[in-house]
Amino acid sequence: MRFPVGLELELLAPAGKTRFDLARALAKQAGGALRLSFKYHGQGVLPDGRPDCHLTPAARVLVRGKWFASVVDDPTIVDDLARTPEFMRAARTDDVRLAAWIERSCPGHFRPLQKTFAATEDEAGFVDPWGQPLVRWHQVSAERARVCEVVLRPLGQKELAPTLRRVMKLATSLGFTVPAEAAVHAHFDAAPFRSTASLRRLVLAWSKERAVYLSRLKPNPRCRKLGPFPPDVVRVATEATDELPFETLAAGLLLAGLHRAVDLNLLGLVERFPKQPTIEVRCLPGSLDPEATLQALSDASAFLESVRELDAPDAVRRTIRHVQRARGQKDRVRGV
Image (cartoon, helix red, strand yellow):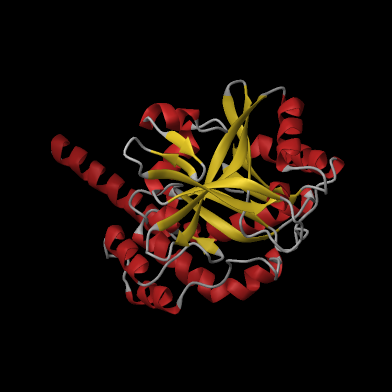
């Protein structure tokens, strides 16, 4: 399997519990610390075209001072939430940069926002000294606190299986379940695929063998934001050649409509400044079965390895040519 791998596990807390119950249990199990935070979710645009950025309560688990896991909301999980008249206050902003700053800098409250921007609070949220809104309040169902996406740090070969088993066993013991539309998302390092040949093969090989791999991975049919690459993306990858500069092909795929809500999210590979420089495999089924998840991860990794192996002959030829040139230079120096 290709390592390291980062995982996102979509779970649901039982009635009466929240994602913070699992976060506290994870911190206790690992002998770590719990830090409250916010998670920024882009929710499209407002009627006037400004971005709609939601900030939901989250927590981070630190082990020996380093990030181990986060528990966050996932807006796609809705089907299993009970209808309830109870609401909780949430925050939103129309500034993407401010949302990202709050995610990094605010430990579960907005005092850093008040201090940094001299903001004051009113009934609707926080405003700057000139009365311009920074953060606005809105109401969401209290059931949203049950949604629990566990984001694990990138795990190496020796730690993946035991960590996954511990986390899933703990979640099961607390009564957490797999939501109806859940998935497991796996993030693999994009760096080894940052070439025109590899990028083309990723798009074309998945498009050609998609049905075969989906039969192995068995994605959740109720999972949202999955699907094949858009036809224009496949067309661009087909018509391109391996001699095309990587940046040109990447830009062409983006212009052709490449987006994240597909089986393989390649934005971390093609964007110039990606938030996550990874290939995200999104079509793994939601699960609390560690062995089944490990098998699905192995199958996904096998596909990525098959794409990389196609580059091996070219790499071998380049190495041979390099060695031959080096030997030729030595022979000329020796006068052979």
